[in-house]
Length: 380
Image 1 (cartoon, rainbow, N blue to C red):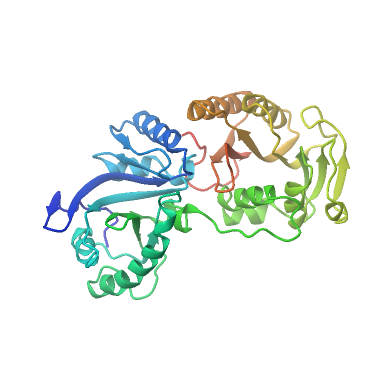
Image 2: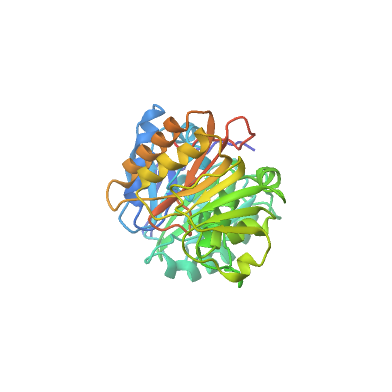
């Protein structure tokens, strides 16, 4: 089976529908952050030597980046390095004006030749307009799967080694068809890991760190870097959400905050609560981890986080950067470049706007010598 995405027919028109091939990337994002994702894709594509342009609408929850060399561009921009993209797909067809009586035939006609997909993923944008499409996506998927198998385009059983076919339902008569490589895309539909709020979690912020550890670290890193008995600091810890997540991995935590922690977090016996300013406090000995979710200007946070790595106060870190209301992509680049420069040592830096993030991004940092998934630093 070829890994390339051959072109669908350039343009197909019937009495009932219009279909056109698209060479490019389809990336999902948090609704409202389409300009940031479009800016990131445009700038990073240009830096990698690719011409293209972004197509999107505010609050749509996705960006189409059109490029004649989409396969090469996709390889140049690994999903793990894209900050505002929850998911990265290789889009190949845009089918509009579909007849509700037969949406299947146009999709089968627009499939790339000589590719057998290992899974069908039915999706809709995570937006106010897209969420009502969930029911249609499910029912359409139930009808499409057997048709794909009959046509030989989908394996009988799910095969995680093969490309996935994604059908993004934009509305009742408009879908996008795309593919994903399992090793270069998020494994969750829409790129959203479905995490449940634990009854013992002190705050919803716990979900942010749980998602960060799931998305920004691979399985081997979670096993190696989050071991029982490791020592960590949580800056700005109250009421204890991130501290609680670390204790669940068996880490011993110094929780730094003038505010109170929830009593059951202290009752773990793994937590030392120090009433101090998270921006001024420093550990007496080197720690394995530092985490920080303080509400502060992102450049100030970036500089303080850099000092922790530069001074050797911790080996690994997860921290959030709260973004301004305007020029958020530019501020993201500036803060991450500032952090990397001031840290003064070789680091692997990965950054994502997670599903549980709001006006912020989450950053994971580890020594560059540590094995890491393809992609490395988030900004290339």
